[in-house]
Length: 209
Image 1 (cartoon, rainbow, N blue to C red):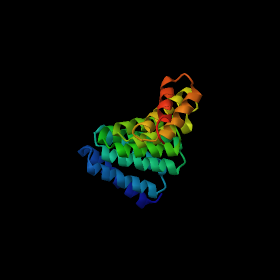
Image 2: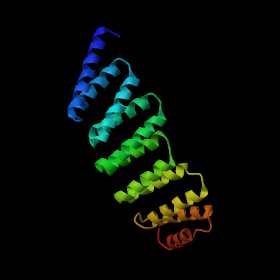
Image 3: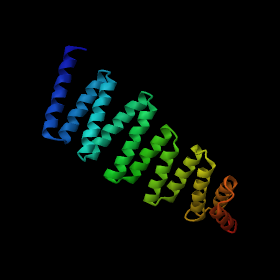
Image 4: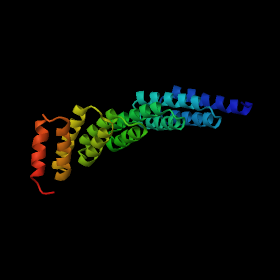
């Protein structure tokens, strides 16, 4: 490490300390940004990640979601680049929760969940996505998340539950009786005692395709 680099880092760190004394705000976000950029230029990825985590926590605790989300997005990208999928997924889920609960941007929250699912398929993530789609009253998005659950669920009972909900959507707002019948029939194959699946199948078969 050269003396000029050390001097620049010391100056950036001093600006962070000074900005923190002044309070959590734009000046602090800018100071963190410059220090993170310097650490990355020096190849100190772990140090940059620590600063981003610190920034995200400070701004989230201060109720300032924007800078916290920016820091989390940067940190998630670093983890992805490093091949740390578990950390990247956890950070994307943290972003989704913040987008949902702090900024009430449900569309962006769902996009974050989708990215988390693409990084690593998870029934829990898909279930959360389906719940978020229901809050948004987006039936097609909910059906897509139910399909994603079926990609990873193995337990017959849980698969049958998802298929029943999918059949309800196909028979109702999505107006796809053929697909409703297929979903209900598969649910019954998994659990023949499901009365709701039986009723859905009968209703779907009685409608024109």
